[in-house]
Image (cartoon, rainbow, N blue to C red):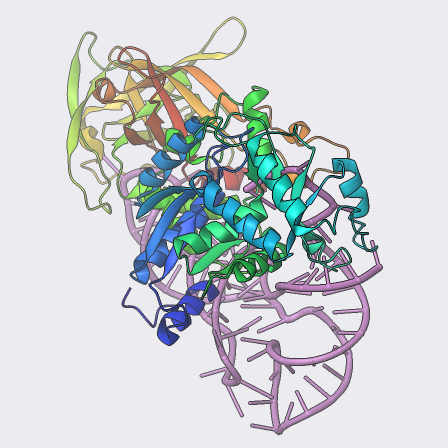
Length: 562
RNA sequence: UGGCCCCUCGUCCAAUGGCAGGACACCGGACUUUGGAUCCGGUAAUCUUGGUUCGAAUCCAAGGGGGCCAACCA
């Protein structure tokens, strides 16, 4: 707010200029204008951070305005979801408003336009209107109703509102120019008849404004100064300006467009997300694989990480696609500094310590945070003769640079002892069933008094004390970086990653987490960040969602060797 | 093909006529009881061609490439 030297995006620079010049003669006003027909996603988060951020930085106001002008797709459940997600992201709006509350005013504006000869009632069919609009390379032709007398237009408009006509019988159009090079300006439709129940207005209205008619005028009614939207609305700016001018607003708001957010391996279109949900490709709007805020929340992503991410990617006018790594970095960077570490074995392999007394067990103290995280706390973890380690941490014939357990090799058990593998036990099928190891009692806590070093440290749990749990390992939902760009005629559904969710049913976790509340976040050491699932996890049936893996330079090493 | 918008390291964003910089990614190294984190170092870009200018990523022109617009969706 005070950092005038901080680098700013082109929009903030513009707002700063406008504030300095007193251009609008009123405080900065922004708005976030979702249509309540779907759940907000990370792309909306970018817009939310921008609009709410600017209002805060410039001591302005931000409105949450639902652009609810289409009764057939909208629902209260979406307005509730949107409000919840904005709050969760950490923002508070100054006013909660609805375009549907402006229907009366919009109707009056329509009358004004008709009286000025700037709008008319067209009675052509939908098909005729489309035909007469021309194409991008060919001008359109006027409707035969275009020159109806004002009085007739007024009468028709009134009767449209009164419900005298069926859907599609008439529309109100702006009278501009059928040959306009900007298609949007070829007498755009303003009001259409829709005998449909509106989730807020009920059956009070049967004519509904279209986006172009409602949006700019709603901004103007609210005294918005800076109306920020995405690039695809660039052409609409012309009708926006035309309408606020014709209706007579002084110092009307001005629209500025910025590039929408795209992230590799994600789809951001609400239409596509809705399809994923309705077709059951995912388990709902809050499926942790979804780019929705609800999905990310359930996945374990924090609002702070999302806000940091939005800061990182910046705001510009060039279309772009952000690498997934940029997003994952923001997530790890935030989680690293806030969540406790615990031990969880994903694919258990039994280890028997042949020189550890049978029936004995002990408690080892394990800090929750590593030395470089400024948080404190620890818990005791049980240790005994039979343990589980991860199958991936043992190889019978290890390649070079494999620093983990192998026959004859010594490794450290995290917070525990050094162990050495002495024997590999196989089942009749020849698969490794169990390892026999010896432990060195002198290395309790993880250090050898003789200064002996080990290459690797692996995680483990005590077989008798560990708690079975379910792990949901999420991967990218799509196999291609740009699922929106699947070739013509092919469905983006075909690009879905069949392994976007891998469920592990028999993971084993240290018992300390058993009674933590659902929604608790952890780092499972050496594995990744996880959150206990708020929907399905309960005491006795623990379920964890993997938020993001840890960076894995061993995987990278392996890939290079391959 | 009409109109409009955009084009800087692999990716995202800066540089607002004056030394092309940051973040992520990548590659090395240090450190390490997480192959995590951290620290240090490195590779790496102005779409092309002209023009204006003492000086151009920046201004102009042409070309190339990408995107948006022809829903009674937003």
